[in-house]
Length: 67
Image 1: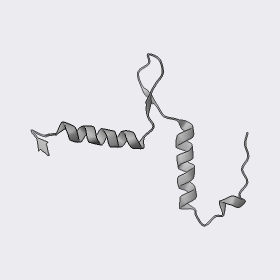
Image 2: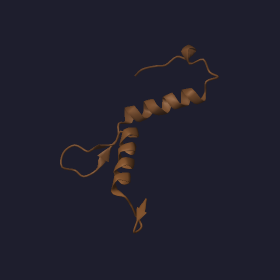
Image 3: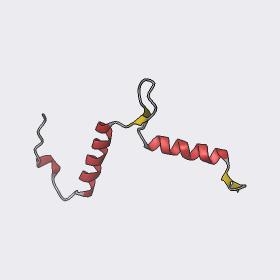
Image 4: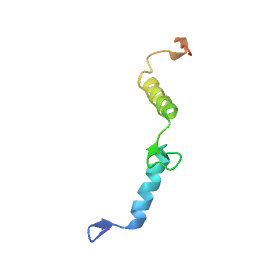
């Protein structure tokens, strides 16, 4: 519900909670202003999504290399 052009605060807090649940944004360490995300977590999520989208490939037969 919108009152005077602004949503009720509980709706804003609810949406903020929903966004926090699906993201991995954390404050930067120290006194610096800003935020950071985990590259490893984002990369894993993208690879998992890629594998789901390309289910015609038998990924168990693919070789990976580690550096």
